[in-house]
Structures are given as structure tokens and as C-alpha cells.
Image (cartoon, rainbow, N blue to C red; front, side, top):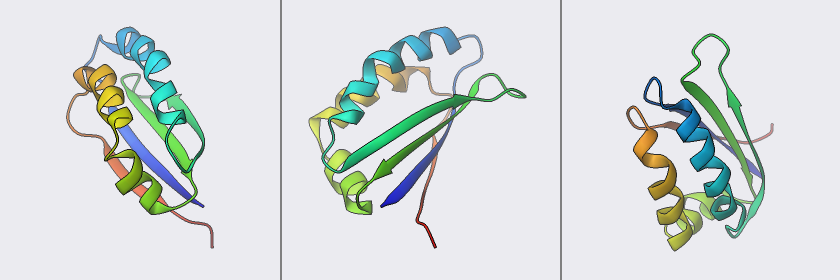
Length: 95
């Protein structure tokens, strides 16, 4: 199992729209092959910054499977317009 961490900056003032779009978009994420679970958290200090974590069975389930799928295109089309720059994405594994 790996954990994808995505630090997402949203255009200031667009947080409510982003959260509504995310509520709809998360179904595409959850339908990805190898998907296990996810969570989205909003920063207290920087209210337009969010932390998305997604657990995948393997790195390839995310980087090849999901990112190459029509579901990713739908996911990004819904939430991407709210981004203020590209998300910072890293992958982690248990030791």
C-alpha cells in the first residue's frame, strides 16, 4: 500500500466552490482501480490550502491506472479550475 499526499492551493475566495466540486469529483477517485480510501483536510492557518491523502494498493494504481483513466480527466475537470498552481504530490510507504 502507498499513500499519495497532495497539497492543494485553491484560489482565495473559491474555497466553497472547490469543496462543492470535490464532493462531486470524489466519486471518480473512489472508482479508480487499486483505490482503498481517501480524506481531504482544510488548513486552519491557511484556509485556501487543502491536504488530500489517498491510499492506493500500488504506486502504479495511481500514477498509471488512475492518472491515465477517463475518471482522472473528469476528476480534474471538476476541481482543477479552482487550483492556484499545481498541487504538490508525493507518495509514501510504511517502513
